[in-house]
Image (cartoon, rainbow over all chains, first blue to last red; front, top):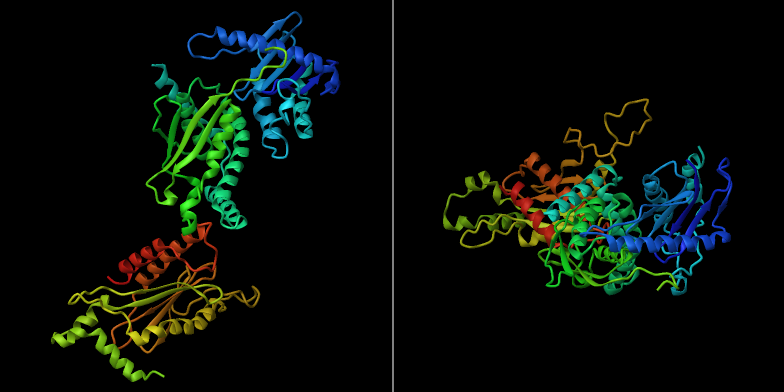
Length: 159
Length: 193
Length: 210
């Protein structure tokens, strides 16, 4: 199984973290929070947002429906959305059907531990009104977060 | 039929998470730490208890916006459809997981948008006796109202939370009231609306 | 200056009003310990009293409240207590007579009482006496001294039921610890709470005035 990239979107429609791996063989390759991925981030957000709003309208009874994965051409997009508006998105190949447990682990043990519980790190990455609705630019720069994320995902980059 | 089954499983989720997935801390240490915070605030603000109340509320707000993320990470629960479910989730899961208590939900308003939580035991205020001047004005556990307001705001529920009565003030029970103002709309990227 | 013999007479007079009714009271008083009053105080680290209380039993003879201590003597109660503090402090820092040699000469004998010989050594027993009044003491782990004067039958020395008094002290100690847990209470300050006062009095009724 190979992972191509990992993204985090917050409730202000901003991408607050992205990690792309360029070489399957090298888990240290690729970019973190680079500017070139901003366009991709917006497109990714738009697609997930549209599909999510359609699925929510399609839900029967009272149970809320949500998108879990989107299969496209050569890769699969896995999403994990929390009630607080955070989206954890993983792009991978077709080998594994679900990364929900991986994304849930990243949310509960890496994001919550290093970003939420860190009082000195902002919980809301949009500092003012102008940075909401997709216009924000702040990213997670927390070194502990990045290194533990790398350590967790590195074994899954290539197989 | 589904409502009682779901509320039972909420209770089971709360208890299971409390037993297995939480690290525990000594209750007296917690109580004494909170007591030290409140009494130091009273000294710092020169016994102006209104300011102390507001400060406790804002402290609670900052705790709540982060605590809700922790709560969602532990329980992976989705957003609630209505205030009834919200109230059950708060009392059966949230209070159980973080404070090991289950307050009762009562006093629903007619439109089902406001309810009260009756706290029969409050770990924050064990052994506390308020001095005479504080008894009239200080809401000792006001941090709880801030926590709930912050947490609910992060799941798009704009609520007012306040204490109605408090045993420390001499009232018969401790009552916390939550009123929904409006449901905040999820943000839409510029250009999509 | 107070004439002590006249005080003794005065004690006789007040504690035996039923004498005037011609009743045979002497044996009653000796056998009935509930007439014994006590004056109890908690003394802080700077010798400041943080709590004082006088316990009497309400005999209610002819609707009258038995005065515990005679009016003149009442003023001396605080002085009597404070006088005994020296002895209490001596006992507090007394080197244990059982100190083992070779473990460093002074092994910091904390709270070794001459009278009481057991492991939990907060209770010091009867430490002093003043003309027939006995004074018992108890030291908490934080150095607060709980002292009490036991008034008694005017003839002879007061008999102290060690066990009951010790239980009383231990329960007051627990109440004191609960007071300390209140974040609004600063150490060494007077204890203003009426709840504390009423609970101490209830304990006094239970253990001291059977």
